[in-house]
Amino acid sequence: MRFRCIAEAVWLPGLLTLLLVAETLIFNQWLGIASAAYTLRCVAASLGLGVLLFFPSVFFSKRNIRYLYVFAVSVIVCLIFISQFLYYKYSGGFLQASSLAYSNQTVDVISTIKTLLTYKLLLFILPLVVIVAGYFSAGAFSKDATIFVKEKVILFFILLIIFCGGYGTLLVSEQHDFASLTALYSDSEMFNLASLVKKAGIVNFYLESLIGYSFESHTASAADMSFLPQWAEGRTLPAQGEDFGELKGKNLIFIQLESMENWVIGYKIGGVEVAPTLTALAQQGTHFTNYYSQDGVGNTADAEFSTLNSLYPLSDSVAFISHAQNQYEALPHLLDVNGYTTAVMHGDVSSFWNRSNMYPQLGYEKQFDKGDYIIPRMVGPEGLGDDDFFTQSLPKLEALPQPFMATLITLSTHTPFTLPSDLETVQMPADTNLTPTQQQYLQAVHYTDKALGNFIAGLKADGLYDNSLIAIYGDHSAYIGTTDSDTQHIPLIVLAPGNVLPKGADTTPGSHLDLYPTVADLLGVQYPITVLGQDLFATRTPVVTQRVSGTGAIKFIISSNMKYTSSYDGIFGDGTCITFPSMSPLPVDSCKTLFDEQASTTKASDIIVRYNLLPVLSANK
Image (cartoon, rainbow, N blue to C red; front, top):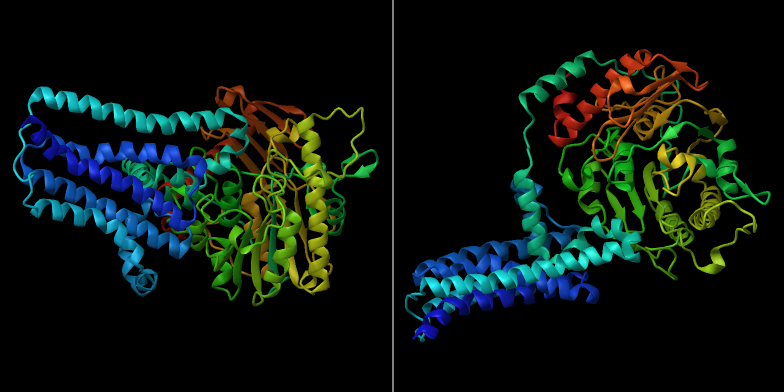
């Protein structure tokens, strides 16, 4: 009799847990993200989740309450599976908890949802059918079950062991991966939402997102709401440059080079240029030699964010993931409403950096990702070599209606900088003082540089080069121990048809924030006041502010005539102030006004991004 009571309480949550495991694995398989290497941890995490979700019903004595509880939980799980399945089929990405704020928009895409419906969705409804069938069955398990306190205690510890074992397997496996050589790829795993889903399962992924979202503050404080308009009122807006409209109607091509540092331009090994294409283009166009990235923990995604929005990246989270549903006045959107076709091309999966969700918010009409390219051979960690990427991107550009804005993002100079041996064509002297990693980096740079040269030649051959404004820039440092690695010193080369722009080096300090207003002025498109950067060809008050990743404290500030560098304790008075670029010491208080201005600007940017307050700034002027 005791076994019968316990079995009545346990069989249903046990079966639902097994169904959850099966649904999770099949979900991953149907979406094409399943990985045999992660099956064990996915099963373990799903078992742990099943115990957490369904087995609390064991401790209810009343049969009706037990069934009502598991039915309610199963409805939620069913909705998660179905909504995520449909959304992935529609966009290639995954819904996060922040999307709940925009659930009212679902009615606008009902017609699209109908086209995505499939019999496969019945699998996720199956647990509800099992629960209803179990409730109305007249079998042995049909009465209230009375489980004694001692039995409940034993059950609790058994379930606790299963729960801890399930999630423990996931955590130990993840820790092992990051501690091993595969840690070189940990960033692509950590910020690829598909990777998180195939490891932990879609329900775990969404519930973790929901928990994190619940603990975040989504409303700015009264102090922040008071600060932002006051800062906006006191802000001096940059003047429109004399170059406004010089290239009106031209295409815009952004080429974002992975981990490209500025020092490689003109660098030689054994008398041979490592990056001859970039070196030549730096002379043919304008080469900004004091250009810096603004990335935080998001690296490449932060570079995209700052470049396209002219806002600072968050120091402790990745806006592409945590604030993908914000309202932005990004450059692709601005050009889209001014008659441009907008497209972005990269060799990653669309879920990496949550790009499939973020790009539409930024105004990109078309996305070309890994699935749109053929990978004839593995080059680097992602597989698509830059030569193949550029070669296959060229016809995609040619097919875009003009004028267009297209962003191309390379991969082959990503860590660990490994190439097939036949692509390592730089002859390294035996007595070089470069580390093995630095040598590998230069081999990768040389390969990418050659691929870029072929691409530029292709643009010239099909007439796009002479009809386009082209900006070539690094996304962030390579972090290989060079002098520039700590300062995020990267190249920016701006190419334009004719003699519109000056040729050669330009020492104007600038960063990712400045590229948006620079190209908008040249194209004759009035950019919004939400832009924090300045036209590098017309700025009277150039400034670069870089922050410490994680804390957001100011790391250094460079203006046209001085540089402030903070101390490790973050106290202003403990920092240093020098003239720039002559590097003569100044009293630290000489930099106080500059510091206060930039501290206020970065604070305003953070408030805008964290609390989706760009409309407030827009309405202030």
